[in-house]
Every structure is written in C-alpha cells, then in structure tokens.
Image (tube, rainbow over all chains, first blue to last red; front, side, top):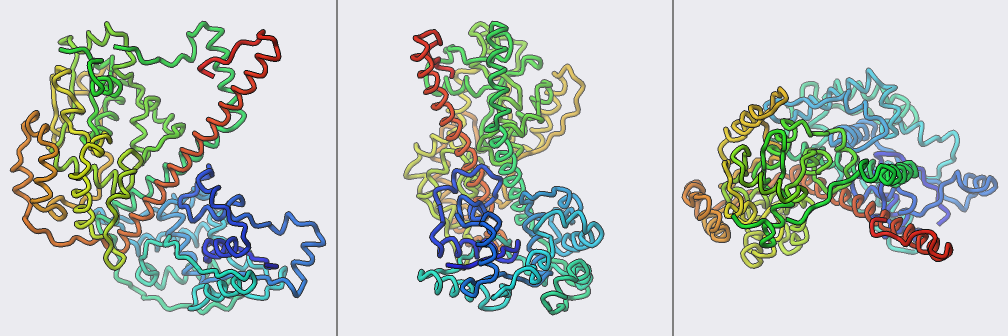
Length: 298
Length: 324
C-alpha cells in the first residue's frame, strides 16, 4: 500500500492495525491461538508481528527507509487523541482492569478507592492523576503513558496525515484511505475494550489539570484544546455487581499473565536442561529423587 | 462398604478425594460447594500448602485462587495414590475424619451456571454454552432470559451437563454409600466454613489461625431475581437424588421464589465487563492449549530423534521408553 503508520498506544492503534493488516493482506489469524504471550484479549493479538505480518521500518535497508520517509508516493500516517481521554483509557486498561504492562509499580501507585464494597471511579481516577503527576518518571517507563509528542515525532517524520481519532469521522478517514490504496473494502471494528464509564463522570477539573501538566508537550505540539471538567463532580460509583465483575476481571487477567509466564518459561532451554538433570538424578538415585507418586489401583 | 474400584463414579471419587495424613482427614471436594475455600484451609492446616508454586501451573483455572486445586500447590495426596492397605485404613479407622461439603442443589446449579456458562470458565460445560446463547436487549444482558435458556437446554440434555463435575449431582459426586462419612457439612449455612476452620485448627499439629473465607464467590445476584418457580421445579426434579439422599427441602428454596420474574438486565458496564472476562478466559485457554501443543511437538521430535539414534547405534542406545 506504500504506507507508513506510527502506532501510538491508546490512540485506536488496535483498530488501525487490524485494518492495516487486512488491507495489506498480511493478517494471519491462524497464529492467534498459538501465541504464548500475556495478551488479555484476542483483539490485542494484532500487536504480535506473526499476526499482523507487517514490516517494521527499522528492519528495512537504509535506502528503503530513506524512500519511505521522503518519497511522495508513500503516505506517512499517525493518529492522535486528546491527552486526558488517552490517559483515562490507559488508566482504565493498564491499572484499573490490571492488564499486563512493563511496569507493575504503576498499579501499586494508584489503588482503588472502595466505599461500602463499591469502587468510586471518580476518586480512583483522581488518585491516579495525583500519582501520575507525582511519580511521572515511573509511569513514563510504560509506553501507554508516554506523551504522544515523543512517539509521533513531527521533527523526524514528515507526516502526510495526522488524524484525530477522537473526532467524528477520524477512524472512517483512515479506513477510507486504506480502502482506496488497497482496493479492498476495509471497515473499522469496535473492540469494546473500555468498560463504558464516560470520562466526564470520572474526571474532575483538578484531575484534568494534573494530567494537562504532565502532557504539556502534547498540547504544545498538537494544539489540543484544554477541556472544562466539573470542579466537584458527583462521584461515579460502580454497583456491587460491577465491582465484583471488576475483581473477577482482574483475577482472569492475573491468570493470563501467570499462565503465559509459566508457559514461556517451560519452553525455555533452561527448563529443558533442568528436566534432563532431574531425569538423570532420578536414575542415579534408583528412583528415590524426583519420583512422582503414581496412582495405584484399588 | 464396597471397594472403591467398583464403578466409574467410585474410581473418580478415589482420584479426587484429598488426604491430609497429619490431620488424619479425608475430604471429598464437591464442586460448587465451597471446595476452593475448604481445600485451601486443609492444605494450610496440614502444612502442605505451597503458594509459591501457583505461578508454575499452566492449567485452565479461572482465577489465582482456584490454583489451590492443583496437586503441586495444595500438596495433598489423593486417595487413589495411596497403597490399598492405607486406603482401607483411612476408610475404616475411627481416628480418621471423613468429610465432605454439600449445598442446596438449586443454589448450587445456579452458581454452576453463573460460573461455568455465563462467565465461560474453562471446563466441559463450556462446550455446551453455544446451545444457549445470551439474550441481549439494547446491548445489555438479560440475566433472567439467559438463565431461562440454560434451564431449557439443561432439561433437554441433563446427562450431558452431568458430565461436567460442577453440575454432577452431589450424591453421585460424594457417594455416601461408598464412604462412611463422619461429617457432611452444609455450606449454605454461613457458620459452616467457620466450623470447618475451627475443626481443622484443632486437628492441626502446627499452630495456625485459619481465616474462614468464602473464595470464588459469584456475582451476588440473588436467585429469586432470576429464577421463577417453573424453572426451579425443573431443576429440582433433575437433582431429586440429592434431595432424597441429603434431606434438602424443596420448600426452603421455593418459598423465596415467585411464579413470574421480571427481566433482570445487567447494566452496560456489567455486560462489557462480562464480555471482557470471557475474552481473558479464552486467552488463558489459548495459551494453555498452545503450551500443551508445543510440548507435544517437542515430545514427538525427541521420540523421533531417539528412534533414529536407536537404529543408528545398532540398538546400543535403548529403545524409546513410554515416559519419554
């Protein structure tokens, strides 16, 4: 398709990658059930190279990179989103539902606020905003919290299209571009990763100001408008059932992480070597060491 | 008392019955009758609990709490693993406590539906979920109608459901005709778990303060908001043996139910969270399956190499063994 896309986390990058791989014809759905990585949802598996099948810029030879970055035949595309909406989405996905990330500390820094067995979304998000402003460096180790201006480097790449995906028609614009260039009908899919609590019901003016301060570079680079949020919003409480479902969700995510970690470690050479060593010791000790009790017939 | 290899149920019973030699306790864990909580307490009191191994288990458990059912984590031998003389002693000695936990069949099947089918927890019943689709109304899950779909499917294919141990009648699961139980605990009573904790702490050689807590609880939506009298009667009929064996009362559950139940709709957020949980459980299953597949591949490759070496060495290297 002659298209370069810079994926920015929490800016519809899952939806865009699905469309891009589909349009380019590199999508490999057969790989999805074979992945051992700790990806919580099938839709997220698109970020695995074996699934999307797209080439990364860095793997190309230098002259080709030069052509991709400068040729008028190539389209260079990036997507951006209001920083508060993006950080709310990152909080909800990475911290609130506990999806795996590179930095686990961030979950400890922004605990839930629970009142009478119900999660207070407004207070919990306020705790996060406060932690983000206080421990910014810690959060910046996770790419979901990194400012968009450090990912979408307009000084390094001459973007032909910079799409605001939170504005009406933003995603459709990208879908139409992919359809035009590939000759295939590409439609954006909704992946429903959010739990559906509107930002304005969870964010206070104070939280918004703290986040705006952290992402000041995004406001400067892309000219986002600063929003008005209620100074003292009514606290949005999850119901008891919603709170239980959140806890169950976290437990399921924790199991995905644990199963993935163990599965990967058991495929490693070190694990294999340990098994060989155990088998050797079992033989040398005439079965006294590392013997698993077998079922006896009764 | 008949031998435990007398029929299929009995052999299964021997495979699942947990033995705590220090406590001198035999526990038959009944699925959906607080078995996660009770197994954890027994392992803690016995001193065999190894939580550090939980992260090494690649199985389909739904949550970290349920990893207690893995033998490496609870550290408790199963009855089927012991020599016949020891089994005979455990089943007959007055020093041993043989106990199991049971629960009102209607509440148990509701809990099993919620956990195994609504949330799509891993297990055999999951394969039956396609036959009873969710009922959605404006993007919200109609809990009542979805449960009604289950009752219809259950009454048509009862034996298929019974193949999943979460739905198996408790009589078939615990077989009081084979095991001479000293104690059968009804966990519907909120004090029952505390009673088990006290009893285990008394028998334990190690000083332990067991926290009687209910693990693996459901969504907390009361049965009477979801199930009408007609559906309750259908389900109770399927579990009639449990009512006869353990003396559960039909009226106890019926008295709280009504002939007609208004639709109980989950909220949009609740419905989305439910979908996300299903997605995460599916990923967990995919990873566990992929792991098993890759290990099986490695097994086949190693076996092939061994066969080649065996032939190339003119049988100096041994024939591939079954354990390889």
